[in-house]
Length: 280
Image (cartoon, rainbow, N blue to C red):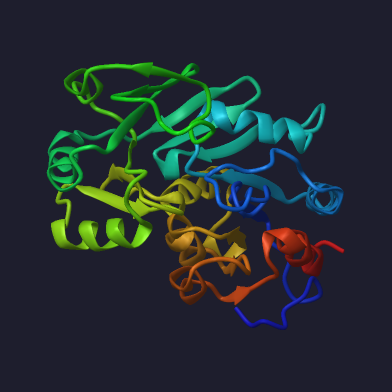
């Protein structure tokens, strides 16, 4: 989509927003963020709602880590239909409030995890424990997972189909994980590397894009009706899928390459600046 398009030419029917690094500012040097929505961004998102467009949160977070963001944004408004939310990088789709999972994709991650642990034997592994937190083989660094961490033997963690697996090695780098994943291939799963040595494993073909396609179909919309904004490698499919995909200014090169355009960084309220082009 052309960079010069404005509300006079096109207005999205659906706005898909990543959370961490898009709506929330990162705390520099950590894997954590400030759980604060800036007034400028809050007002821009309210303008989207005023125009009758659908706001859809789309994140790698598990469902219980996303409802508080909806609450900070006052979504949905009183009397409006429940919010659609794409969680776990597209593997879980839910409505809120109350939290009701309406679609979930699961897979057997045991072989992929085994391959990764052969390369990084001291890595941390986590899967979601719905509504509580995560089951982990060992505790993750403080602040990196939402909810409780329940220490569990690895064979029990992977003993049943799961929607998403997180693998984290605090001693490695993001580049280490990118190279490892490419080398292994990780057959039977899709994967995305995060801000550091953080690997999300998901069912094949599942991404934020597939989750948004599910939501759009139920709303009577399509990719061409969608504006998507994100900053991470797990946003690449979403940015390619959307009629207009916009990368945050601080995103890594692969994300910029997947997007139609780039806005300012999260520290400069880039998402709000983009939204105001279409929702003055």
